Length: 449
Image (cartoon, rainbow, N blue to C red):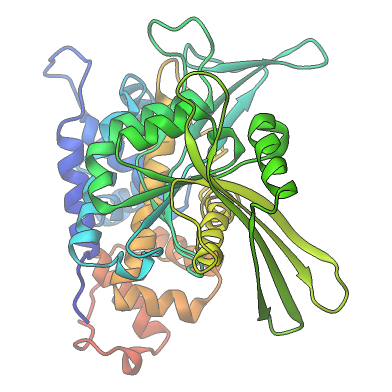
């Protein structure tokens, strides 16, 4: 199997992205650690899902004269946790965006998104906000605030974490996040809608050539954001609730009363019983009243148990894609793919070992956001390796549980030093006696002394 993006390729992309990180320190001959070492050290913690990774590597360096932080991640000198926090705190997290973009571009170059395309040739990108830090005591200048019912103030950090999704696929591909934090020149507290608009404007030039349809919940289905998406070359399929769009649903009610809605149904055996999906749709309906209202296409899906009549699912959406009886099921399936950002991205980051809500360091400026960006990159790299590295994919398949895989990684790297990531994978393949299942060349022998 050809490896379009190996671990070394991903590391090279990361190194290139870290070269331009700013260093706010004054030049000094006493400077021990580079900004790059701090970033790579933090990345190693997230990639191995081991908060004690750097401490273990310091012990290996003392005992064996070398360590995995250097051989696998390129850390020249291992900084302590406080040095990492101090060095990374002033760095604006958007400095890491080019790494996400470059990985996306390389995946597209090797046609790894071809199987993700739907609705002709569309790539689905889901937008959703998530909170990654909260405290009633710890705060910084970039914290958001919320007044609690007990009179206390909650300080928290949130971000939009966009991902490429596809119905029927478990993997998602992380894209550059957009942080919800105080903005220069704005008195109002930043919010998810404003962050969504910034993401659209910032990344339109990069992603619209790939024919992208944005997915999002009801928060995004407001005319200013929809119009901005269209003006910047994006398509959209967004949840649209009646309570949030009374004028739109007045028009839908009128056309329903005058038999103006298109209706159809589809039946599907899910392995246990027959599901009936009922669709209603209406094209060219105005989203608002007033000047220059946006014309959108609306559709609704209701899924019921064919035998019992029990409602299994119901939702409604707006889109700029033309909706017909022939394609409404496919458009609805694409719209429902939005929930993969919760199931396959945010929930994985919070509950499957990445500890995205853990306080790895809050700092006084951007540290919490920088840590999230590095954590997202670690998640992205593992996803890409599962796609493009047959050795890695085989190990994940055999070990099955994500937790088991990372437990093995942590244990091996605590006690042994590997010459490279490929040597670590080779050692695990041999230990599990999986050589015969690899189609590639024989796994090289390994010295882990």
